[in-house]
Image 1 (cartoon, rainbow, N blue to C red):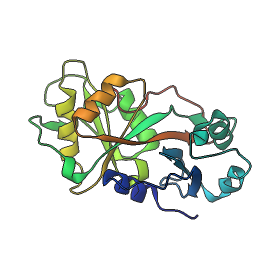
Image 2: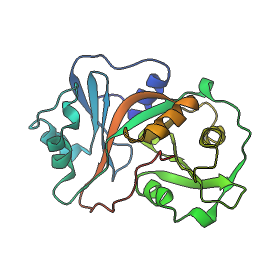
Image 3: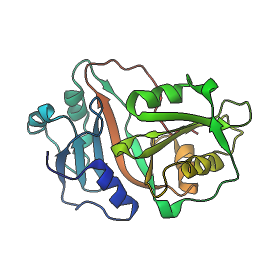
Length: 223
């Protein structure tokens, strides 16, 4: 398939380099075989699907000014029995933007069945479930997500310092890597928290899977 990889696009966005604002769209290869995605930057959208779905795109009304996220587009790509995630904001944190944290995170096997962890394992790889040394239910997942880049998801108990938790999670990501997060637009508290941790909004994303049924799981980024 033509076009850059999603990893390259998000790495570029983390450094302030964005696609041309031309109203167009580009079909690219997915970074995971069982997960498709529509990712829209300002004025240009990218649709990550297997090659066998590419012909269907030409029959759809798609544009880079918001049309790529039309319900008719994602429902066609997912199919009648497919699962469609919510529309999320994509945030990135470049290596230069990482900050120190006073919090120490440890792997929390007791939180392996937390809804955030269950959802992460469905659409991401190499998921590690982390939490503080305190025996509370706040959880952070660090995984290989959008474009194969490190991705953070979080849900706190309301008492844990969510910003510090995000900073601590980011410190555990591979050195020099762009870190991503996906947050529902209506979750304003989570958006503010990720912004305070140095993340920057760069795009929107909607994931989907064909031939599966929606489990009603939450999207990542809850605080």
